[in-house]
Amino acid sequence: MNKVLLNLLVIAMSLSIKAQITTPQPSPAGTQTQKVGLTDVTVTYSRPGVKGRRIFGGLVKYGKTWRTGANENTKITFSTDITLSGYPLKKGTYALYIIPNEKSWDVIFYTDTKNWGVPKEWNEAKVAAKLKVDTYKMPMKIETFTISVDDITNTSAVLGLLWENTYVGVTFEVPTDKIVMANIADVMSASPKAGDYYNAAVYYSENNKDIKKAGEWMEEAMSMFEKPGFWQLRQQSLIYAKMGKKKKAIEIAKKSLEGAKAADNSNYIEMNMASLKEWGAM
Image (cartoon, rainbow, N blue to C red):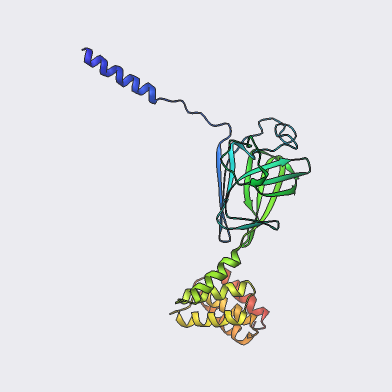
């Protein structure tokens, strides 16, 4: 009997040790991930709420360095080198700090990411970049501190900081063209396939590079495709038009239009018809 009681006691103690009360965190963890061109951007941070308090100029003092969130460092990682309003920043992970003022913020990218909040001893040598950015008053209140990556293009985006009724946006540029051009050079010097010729041609055309070379690559791609799709023919027609070969552009656009109608693709039907009209074929 004693042995049974002892086993029951051990089980009860085990259950009491494992049992824990879980409640929501006051500043829940958040992660923002976004690809900008060919650059991966990741932000990890804790997100405090307004909770009826005055934030900027109140809880977050003007002129004092703030951790840009709650708890440990807010971290931002770039997978490639970037440029911040003309300032180069190497790829890697940075702690993000701000010094808020009423009309502008200093936004700081700090190389030491192993702090709980603001470092006890600030080291200017660890400041990789520091930007003064204007603040904007928003017409609505943002309850939870938010970091966003918006206004995304192939070459740039805006890192947005929003809380209470204040917004700050930091524009950054990414080296997409440099990466793509290096990749094209590598592939084209090896053994390019039909898709490689096609992608290189479209990139050259859309980014206003050597249109003659784009035309050569597109013709090579089309000769390798068993049956080019109407979307591929569309790109070929646009390249011919840029080269000044309007007759060829019209001929290929009509083929693209036929394929789009067969596929019942209204977008490509409309685009081809608009181009044919522009080129005087309709």
